[in-house]
Length: 261
Ligand code: DGL
Image (cartoon, rainbow, N blue to C red):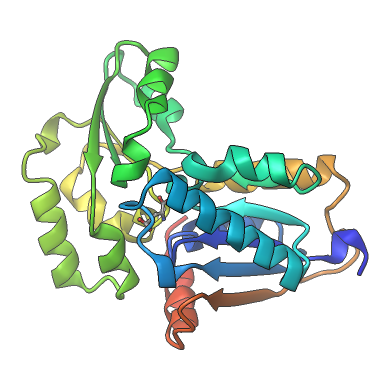
């Protein structure tokens, strides 16, 4: 198959990467995508770095060998932090694009000199020091409030039932002074799928996630590598999951349809 005709792989521990895929489909409408949710091994956020690294390497290998992926988008903040650098070393000829919590826009664009920025992410993502460093780099006056959200991605995986979500969010935000928050960073790709719920708790805050930036970066990388498809109208989407759960695709399409981008 001609190199540029091969699909782009999009990977997450489950449904979270759908929030990134929604931007990819808009920015790269001619491309074929294979979306892979590793739900047999979810959640990634409470695993060790080595475990997530090994799973991500296996996933890219499978998508390259079985689906001939020309590029991989690691649509998972946790897996990007744990594995993107190593994956790029192992696959030097394949564009590998990751996602990181949108700290930069949150600390610089929220309109305040010293904004209070709530960073929601998985425990593994927040255990990495680079966040504090990023905030210091772009706005040393910003007050970063990390909020690990164990269990939240699983509620979203099981369909995002209103009651379960409200219970979980009320518990997670119990100690947060919501009126003082200027910006909320959705630092896990699952959270933009429920951004409307999260907004209810922070009516005055701006909400940031890295989905659009990742899609634009994917487009740039493919263009620079001569891998963009240019000769046809609409690409295809294949949705698969490691648990072979027959309801996964339906739920993925439901989130894809309802997400507000
Ligand atoms: N969606 C993933 C992220 O962006 C992780 C969710 C999980 O813990 O599996 O971090």
